[in-house]
Amino acid sequence: MTTAPLTAAERLFLLRLARQSIEAAVNRQPRPTLPPAHLTPALQAQGAAFVTLTLGGGLRGCVGALEPYQPLAEDVREHAVAAALEDYRFPPVRAHEVPRLHIEISRLTLPQPLDYATPADLLHRLRPRVDGVILRDDMRRATFLPQVWDQIPDPAEFLAHLCQKMGAAPNLWQTQPLTVLIYQVEEFEEPAGE
Image (cartoon, rainbow, N blue to C red; front, side, top):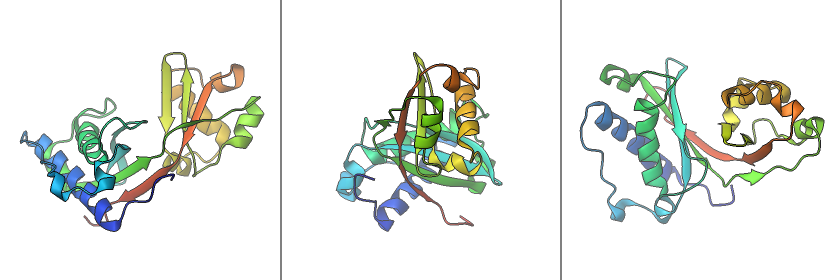
């Protein structure tokens, strides 16, 4: 990370804010307020985050921003609700599911272009479990967080799945140059059992 890591207290605040925001949204209540007096400079600074929800070990929602456009606390609050209610891959989270949801937050660095000459060179330059990857082809784009390397550790397979997520043929990365950006994350989650 180019910025200082969040403190344990800041991480806990964001995890609680995410959970409270999801509970409020699912129950159609007003979202929690963000009193400036309780926000540290890091939480008030612009930041980009993904909020990942799992239920029983399976993905239940994941939504976020690739580049910062609002304060980090607001970004987490917004994307927690979007992960619960607006991830097109899943039906909206229901009230009875909320207590069993597990919340993980990934705070992103600014994406940086990854220059490469050939498909083989691209494979060599990727850093599994370190880099999140964004692929762009004209108006299409898709990303995988660094954590996805745990499920897809082979770089060629990783890129093939990312092309499919983008709505393209799995071998697109081998047949034409794509814009590739990488980023890293500061990842933290609720303790087990919460």
